[in-house]
Image 1 (tube, rainbow, N blue to C red):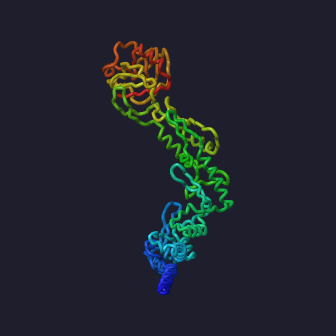
Image 2: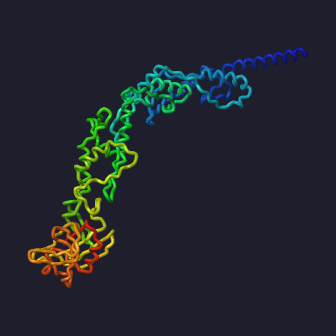
Length: 463
């Protein structure tokens, strides 16, 4: 009986050991219970079977290449014979965990394994090199050239030597990224660009561009009185002779100035600032707006002298700004867009009233008597100026010789003077008992006005 029990125990031991060895052998080549890899239930499956499932479940990734401008370019990796294989990862996992974990299945869990990837390197290289932006980069001009620029920069230096895309480096960089499992490739983060060596012509263009930059930064300022006009790079560039492409022309080592272009600019300046023989809207003291024509007063640039000055001055280099007052054929008492300024005499002949403004402040406001309207001696309208000042002058005409103490002529023989023979001023006296055309002023006020007014002061006369 004892022998039968021992024999039974021995048989059960052998059966158990055999079962253990069988399971150990089985799970040495298959995956244990509750094994999940990359979302695939792998229990009882071999490496080959799991690999097949994982390969079928994996979608081929897209390769995104981001160029230097930030634009995305998508490449289809299936065209490169792209494929994956998990065999090596599965075998390593099975060796490390398969045999040791089948007795404790509750300890197993979801695992994520990376495959071994492979593709046809030559096909990938052809796809990368064939991208539109890569071909465009390869076809870019390799010269160094001066080209017309945009607003704020009249010229730019196109540098075809710097930042050149090297296709071989780009292809190598893409391959390296994919080998690391990186499928979004930033080209700017790789060493994909090179610089080409300058030719003698390239070096000359760089030198000329530096000279052009220096020329355009002229430090020349036009003093127009109330305004100053800086000759900006755009203005300076407009003075140059240019070829059909709009680029400056050199005579050996010297930039060529176009006198015609200089004249065009000066004429535009004159058109903006010249007031002689023009008409303006004038705001009267009483609040009316009247049209008044410039007669003897006004500003007119001397265009010929300015063209000569600029043509010679433009090529000089200077460290400090040159503030230039232009030459005038006729210069007003005040310079600027408003050449009447804030110091002037206003004669409102319709109201028979005269005002004197000094630096914007009205210092004199007085009734006057102007030319006799009934006899046709109307005081002329227009913008004139005090062109002389005299004391104790005898005013003479065909039928009169009148002494005055203060005389300020403004246009021809018409002027502003005292009239001690008059007891009344203003109103409608001028219509029937006016002057021969002059502006009769109360003596006391005239003496004050005479001391205040400078020769050249504008006189605005209107009805």
